[in-house]
Structure formats: C-alpha cells, structure tokens
Amino acid sequence: MRKLLNTLFITQPDIYLSLDGDNVVVLQNDTKLGRVPLHNLESIVTFGYTGASPALMGYCAKRHISIVFLKPNGRFLARVIGESNGNVVLRKKQYRVSDDLTASCHVARNFIIGKVYNSKWILERTVRDHGLRIDVAKFKEVSNHLSEVIKAVRVCDDLEVLRGLEGQAAFSYYQIFDHMILQQKEDFYFHNRSRRPPLDHVNAMLSFAYTLLANDVAAALEGVGIDAYVGFLHRERPGRVSLALDVMEELRSVLADRFVLSLINKKIMQKHDFVKKENGAVMMTDEARKAFLSAWQTRKQEQLTHPYLKEKIPWGLVPHVQALLLARYLRGDLDEYPPFLWK
Image 1: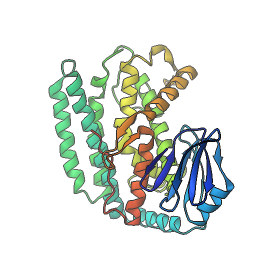
Image 2: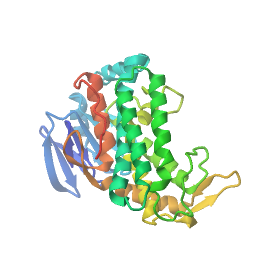
Image 3: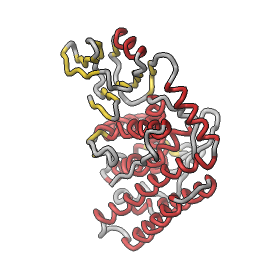
Image 4: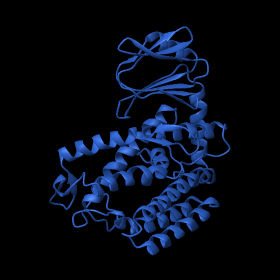
C-alpha cells in the first residue's frame, strides 16, 4: 500500500477494499492492514483480483474518486468512475494539445530529453563499472554526442526536427549497445535494431521487453483517465497506443534495456532459449518466455527513489507516477511535464 500524488496504490494481489465511514479499509483475509481517509484521494489503483465492496465503489463514484483495477502483472482491467466531469476536461485538453503540432512538440521534447538523458546515464554507468572491459573513449564520445542532442532537444519547436534528433540519439546509442554485452558474446550480439521480425537473440528480447513496457504504460495512462491512443510525438494510428509509446521512450533504456542486458550478462537467458524460424525470425521458446516474464515481474518489484517525487517506490509504479504527472500537467497543475531522469 502506497500513497503518491493523492493516489492510493494497492500493490498486493490478495487485498479486498471496503468502506468504513469516510475511509477505505484495506483487508487481507479478513485482517485489517490499514485505513486511509478518502476525502483527499483522487484515485485508488489496485493490482489484484479480490475486488472492492459495492459500498466503496458507490461512495467513490459519487465523489469522483476513480477506482482502477489492474491484474497483478499490471494489465488494465477496468476503471470505475462516477458521472463524467473531470475526465472529459482532461481528455479534451489532451486532444487539443495533440491537434496543435507546436504544443505537441513542447510536451514530446520532454519525453525525448528523458530518453536521451537515461541512455547517456546507461553509458556512463557502464564506463564506471566496467571501464577495463570496454572502449572508454568510444563510450565517452557517444555520451558527449548525447549531451549535445539534449541541448538541441530543449529548444526544439518542430516535431519533424525532434524526430530527427531522437533518431540521431538512438543511432549513436545502438551503435555502442553491443559493447555493453559482456558475456556470451558468441551467442548474444547486437549489430542493429530489427523489429518485424527480430533477427537475433538480443532483438527478440528487446522487442518482448518493449511490448511489456508499452502495455504497462498504456494501463497507467488509462488508469488516470488519459487516452493512451492519442499521442504527441507518435501520431494517431488505428490500434496503436501512441501516447504509451511516447511516455515509454524515457523508460526504454533504464528499464527494458538494462533488464535485457542483465539477463544476458548474468547468463539467465542462454542460446538454447531461442528458436529460429524459416523466415529468419528469432523467437523465445515458451519456457524461456515464462522465465522472462517471471524475471520482469521481479524487476518491477525492485525499489528506487523517484527522481521527481524523492520517494522510494517499486519500478512497477514508475509508469503510473509518470502518467499522474502527465495528467497534472495537462490539467494545468504543473507548468511542464517532468520527465523521468534516472541516475
């Protein structure tokens, strides 16, 4: 149980929520774990399958406190709200910003600042931890280039230019990605990003990790009442969660990439965990996918200090915090969307 930004997060799966006066009561097998006053809550987010009492849902609906139900793995199930009021205003603002290309760029550039900053941090940490095993000069060269890209992104007012800057940064970062693979070099290598289909073991894992991350971010956005399909950098396309792809940019390297590298360097994933199809596509076996998912859920439980809130939270809550911050920016409570800058 964790309260962040007027939102109560219930992260244990076997929790039942009930109402007692003006308080939400947190129960586990009929044992009372705690109670939280409802008068200053905007939302309750529960990662579980036990549920909430009708009395609590009715109380919250009447007072415009949303209750968001997610599966334990973070998949969105449902959002219970009362009469439409604040969500309409929030989404209308989102759509207006999305329709204004300059305004979209001002939001999107913070996503890209977060992405490039975190990519730079990954390189700097590799230099710090493995300086004797890598080409330090090459890492520093790419790191310096990413710093220059960040400066350009900060003042960018054009979406096409922003996409070009993001592409430059991604190209530089991926050029050196293979050097961060320190174990099993014969079987795990990265020459370039291949998506549909992935053509090697590393790309197969990256694609799967990015899919999981996109699902988590989309659930977080839906949980705060934002339309995950209407983005600012990624434009609308039928069936694509464009805004989730926007927000996850800043989390790709620090969450997904680090996770994949750790699975390789710790030899958790090995050559026999993959199969190659006739068309050249490389896929994980069913057993490997289960192990990957289990490790992903474990990683999401690891703690960090959020750089903006300065509070300790599990990695799995980071997309939800960023979604809350984005909603606050769109509502006008924040002057600027604060990207996730991890170090």
